[in-house]
Length: 138
Image (cartoon, rainbow, N blue to C red; front, top):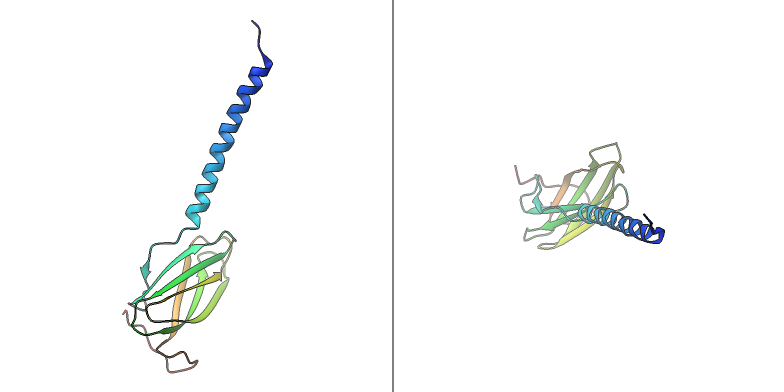
C-alpha cells in the first residue's frame, strides 16, 4: 500500500483550517454579545428616567445611557460600582427633556455586573447645591 505524503499534508491542513476558523467564529460572537446594549430599564428612583448599559472591550470600562422621558431636564449625581472589588466611579450631569446622555465609568476589571445609585436630583435646574429633589418612584 502506497501512501502519498502530499495528500496527507493537504488533508491535515484542511482540518486545521476548519478547526481554527470555527474557533475564531466563537470568539467573535462572544465579543459582539459582550458589547451589546442591555435592555432598556426604568431606574428605581426616577419613574421617567430609563437606562441601559454595556461593557466595553477595555476591562472595567462600562457605559451607561440615560434616557429622559420627563418634560423637563434632570440633573443628578451617579455613583457606580461593579459587583466585584471596591473601585467606585462618580458622575454628575444633566439630561435634557426627551434626550439621552451616555457616559463611561470605570469599575473593577473582574466585574461582570454593574450597580449604580442616583442622588442629588434637580428638575429644570442645573445649578450645584441644595435644595435637591427626592425620588419620585417610591
